[in-house]
Amino acid sequence: MARTRLTATERSEQLLAAAVKAFAEKGYAGTTTDDVARIAGVSQPYVVRLFGGKQRLFIAAVEHVTAQIEQRFREAAAVRPNLGSLADAYNKMLAERDMLVVLLHGFAVGPDSEIGPVARRCFGRIYHVVREITGASAEEVCQFMASGMLLTVLATMRVVGPDAVPAEPWVVELLSGLTKPLPASLEDLTCAPSGTSPTAEPHR
Amino acid sequence: MARTRLTATERSEQLLAAAVKAFAEKGYAGTTTDDVARIAGVSQPYVVRLFGGKQRLFIAAVEHVTAQIEQRFREAAAVRPNLGSLADAYNKMLAERDMLVVLLHGFAVGPDSEIGPVARRCFGRIYHVVREITGASAEEVCQFMASGMLLTVLATMRVVGPDAVPAEPWVVELLSGLTKPLPASLEDLTCAPSGTSPTAEPHR
DNA sequence: TTTCCTAGTTATCAGTTGATGACAAGAAAG
DNA sequence: CTTTCTTGTCATCAACTGATAACTAGGAAA
Image (cartoon, rainbow over all chains, first blue to last red; front, side, top):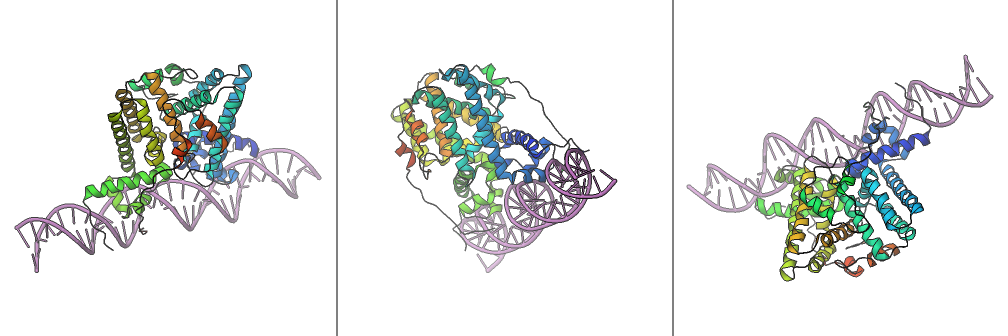
């Protein structure tokens, strides 16, 4: 019965990954701490105790994915520091979906006293990174962010990305209109490398 | 105590307006049927009965705002059938915020069995209207939708639109990068005509 | 082996929330 | 005036959910 014990830090990291998965699926309000606990294979009260509450867990998840996205962009820029390179990195993230979707859910929580400021800061951070890394003009960066937001929303709707619903005509047409920075093919956006799933038995 | 009685149809319309307001504030899962009831000044069970459940109410709200947006676009196109005209209409909606934000929340609910298909259909409908009304190219329409999505997310975050938080530097910079179809000024996006608020006493 | 810290669980709860059913009260018709 | 239909409320639940407190157990040090 007893799983291998982990240090609190290790377990927190694992829970963070579980939280990203859960929140990506159902958003902030729609996800229960028990969902997260089940994915990670620990008890629900432990999740609450390790992070000090659901809200803090969500904030941690949003900041986590923001840091991940930032890192991906920096890595991409290390190769070629232009928007095209970032677009490639973005497409990869889109194929993994969860990071971007969690971020969008963070944005969508809106003016909630605690979460709102965090979400706004995360958006600003990502904008800043893109702007600084590539020497691109304000217009180019804005267009990049806009296309990215469109695609992120489509990913949230399961119109693109892994397990996407069958593409309707308007999807194909819309995506065909994507210009310069993000000319992703529909195929790239629909298939994805699959990960493992540490499912566990129920607890509660 | 007794309010003026309305026909079921009238009351439903009023409830729909209340639902839009409520869902725009807190999203689908975060909003209670009681929130909606309080805004409209009726009892919570009545809301449930008139619409047959929270999910149906949300779906009705999403379809309602979609129809509204479509209508605004058509009206704008009746004057000048080009993207610039639609952009003006879009900016006005952005200043009112709720319609667009509810729609985004609809998109964000994701793959939920009932709501997902509705959200996807609504997105497709709006895309289709924009494409058909203006004779614009796929690229232009895509760029319009992308910019619109970016602004809608910013509105959801309360970065633009009514009651927006004080604009940080990156917001100004990002918005300055907006091109052709939607060159809205920050002032346009931050102020809005205010509406009435039919608050009522608590019930539950 | 005993001690003791930390990882983790079980039991439990209080508040919330969507939903149901029985009932009240206008208003229109007979 | 009474009947009857529709609008709307009240009382009430059962399920859920985040959180707390008390307890268990692994494992390293003494």
